[in-house]
View 1: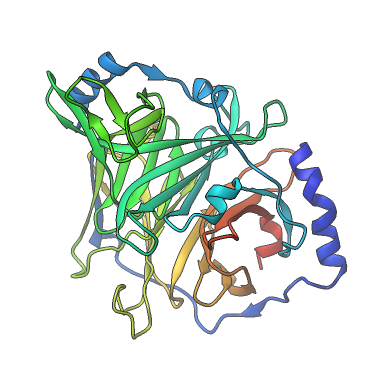
View 2: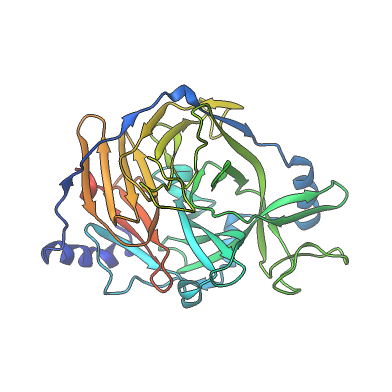
Length: 394
């Protein structure tokens, strides 16, 4: 057991001993099957090859290991007041990120997703969180980023922010711009990072192509400047998009890509929708769906065209997170503050859970209990934490 887990094991035991474990209840309904043929993906991993090659030539690439060697933010421990059944470990961002009213964490994935139970990518065991940025407190979304967090006893408790950008311009004058999406979910598989793009599908990034930029200029400057320098809101690193996964449906209602998660066992990405039973103006008022899309055989990428292998209509609403592993599903409702566990054979079980929660990532472990990583987005209360999946498996 790592030092990170040991730090929380005592607290987790105390939670159970104190009788804080929420007794599961049986959900009122279960998911029902939908026709899988109605849901397809179109993948293009080479959309920006020409411009990205030019950007790499001008700016140079920083490996993940180099980025982490230059990590410049300190993560801190979970507050002693934080408790949740099955708690195993976790952290908080520094005070600036924890209290920001313009930046909001959303998706979560780890290097266990990327490479499996060994968990080390480029020599580091990592937790990656996606964020969106508003132009002011309560304002419009203007860009998105990821935070790469070292999660290994061999390295300092540090993290680094990397701006997500879309390549623009030409081969002779390559450029990039901000990506103003919600970034509600993120999954890392092999070298590729998939970020949910709500009304479209997913944007694809290659973790081998992190670009180095000039940290000078002003906070509002982005991309190539008249003097030939490349700025990125004072970020030292940007991750350019390499491709797009476009979602298609013949069901009459396009999918709302609120969050995603990787299922390494079935080698697929699952997604679900944030919807309301009624009364919402910014979100669909209908039953949400959860769809499974498989990767191409023997690959960490999708085929040019992919048909879903599982499609579900769900009985729960305001879903911000989901995970699937070995035929089992977890769905998190921020509105109900509940985590739903479901299998087709056993049905569903409901657990009380945290408020203002977001995405879920399944953490495989060959020697210790498997975990569910998740996080809270609330200003001043951004706990990133892992619970034992066995505490939420019916």
